[in-house]
Length: 136
Image (cartoon, rainbow, N blue to C red; front, side, top):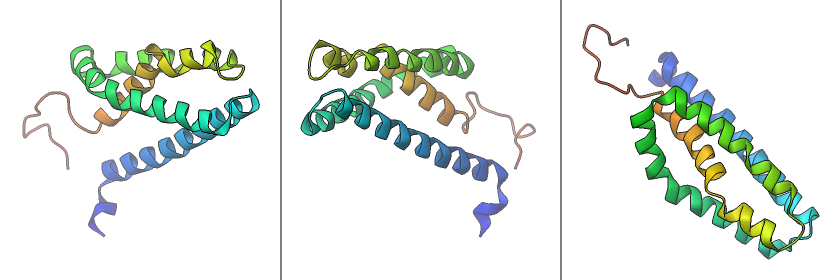
């Protein structure tokens, strides 16, 4: 198959596959932790759905920041902001203020999106390339 000959596409697909496995494992960790902390099953599903909905809403904003600030800064900011969600998760003890804070957090959610958008934007050049610099 022709797409196996392009090493850039192969590396991008490998990266996407690894990222999907990690995000699925992270979602399972969230669900199990919320269940163990006393959140009922419907509450876990609703909270995970609202977190994903928040990511969907924030994605266009983060793409604009990626073009403005560059990929390196976005990867660093996304990594730091993504780590901020775990202290919030540790404070959840059933349905309450801590769970609402975890769902409505803006910075860590945008951090996850910064990391995801900046990693996917690497496949595309951020500025037009001349024909002499393009590699096939």
